[in-house]
Every structure is written in structure tokens, then in C-alpha cells.
Length: 346
Image (cartoon, rainbow, N blue to C red; front, side, top):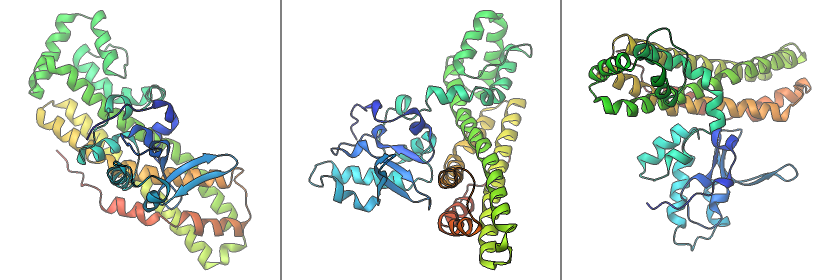
């Protein structure tokens, strides 16, 4: 499929980094006007096309199936573009890593180096998270008495201030353990860094969700469990369902992160081509799972903050909102968890 130049002015860094938003400007669509829209996850975790959004008019959303009502169906590219949009709409998350996998699986070519990367602003925010994964590598090559770095480019810079012979000797031992040539090490570093940049991104997202969910639970407790609605079986049941599912999803994700950390530590203890392949497969096979769960949790928490900016609301209003906005879509989170790939030890 041919790729045309992408107008990067059509979206912001925040949109590009979001799990629940996909600016179609980064996708090689050719139907007039289609790339000026976005795919978004609504409160029910369904994907819709957002034609516009502003403070006065709100968000103009349409069902994916209604594309033909808003765009030129006679355009030569319409059917092909609609197929692409329908494929992307099925993704449980719009994080750049899950998008890469989806587009590759359908042979849709996009300049990944430019359009399917986290923004520089987000990468900078992930520096501290990345050091957890780059530190073992640095210690293998440069020894224990080295500064923390967080990217492949910083690793390359470190060669200027160390004993190159010692560093090269260690790099050669790593290349032999991994079954690759020394000149392939830069590619390995970039691949390793990219994999764990995605993991750092997901970890940061979860760390932002957890305190928000803590406030949400307090909000439901104060406004429903501790109100006159504590005697209302339906209200209590909805509250229990929401709290339990959200807690389960967070715990599930944390267990996956624990498995990734353990596999990473085992890899650096005993380097081998097989161990790296296992580590890489473990993380990448879980991109859609982790991205999907975090996307769903993010959407729910964002919606709560938007609808109750002061975290207020009467007990009845809170209970009605839970039923209308929080319960719908929870089945999608359970579906992602049930269909998650198994975590197999080395």
C-alpha cells in the first residue's frame, strides 16, 4: 500500500501519546477529509469516529459504520480507507506499540520512526522509568561505577569517557552470548530500548491511574456506601461490580509487570540468544493486553473526572452515573484479561 506524506500539524503530542485517541493524520488515508478526524474510545469503550471537538459544541462522534454518510464514497480510496479504519477500530488501545503490531499484521505501511513513536516530551518523562531497564546493560558493559543512562544514544556517548578496550571486550562477550555480530549491537540496543520504552510508558500510565482510582473509590464510598443508598441493593451491587473489576484489572496488570521485571533480571544474569528472544516475546505479546486494559481504565477515570470535576454529586446522581457510565464496557476489560497470552517462565 502506498504511503503519502503525513501532515504532522494535524495532531498534538498529547493525542499521539494517548491510549484512547488515534489521530488519523498519522495513517496513510487518502479519502478527502478523513485524516482530519480521530478515532476515540467512548465511555462504553467502543471506538467511534470523532469529527470535531470544541468547548462549545462538544464532541461530534459517529459510528464507524456511518463513514459513508460523511465522506465521499465515490472516491477511489474510500473502500480501502474504510477497511483500514475498521481494522484500527478493533484495537483495544491506540498506543503506538499496539498500532505498530496491528498495521504490520495488515501490511499497512506507515513511517514508524516518525509517526508511531512516543513524542519527545513523553520520552523525556519516561527517563527515570527507563533507567531500571538500562542499568543492567550499562553495568555489563561499563562496570558498576557508572552513571545512570536511559537511552541507546546515551550509551554510545559513554564510550568517550571510558577505557574503550575494556568496554569493547565486554561488548564482544555480550555479542557472543546473544549470537550476534559486534556491529549488530547498536541495533540490539535500539530494539532493547524500544521494547522497554513501551513498558516504561505503560508503567507510568498505571502509576497515574492508581491514585485516581483511589480517589474514585473514596468518592463511591462516601457518596454511596456511607449514604442512604447503603440499603439499596442495586446501588450497592453496581458499586461492588465496578470496584471489584477495576481492582482486578489493576492487579492483573501489576502481575504482568512483575513477570516482565523478573524475566529481565534473569536475562541479564545469564545472557543468551534464547533468553532475549523469550524476554522480547513476553513483552511484545502482551502489548495489546496491557495497552487495552490501561486504555479502558484511563477512559473510565478520565470520564469520571470530566463529569465530576469537583468530585461532588448527590448519592443518587453518583449511583445513576455508575450504572450509566461505569458498568457498560467492563465486560470488555474482562474479555481482554481472559484472552491474555500466558506468561511462561524460562
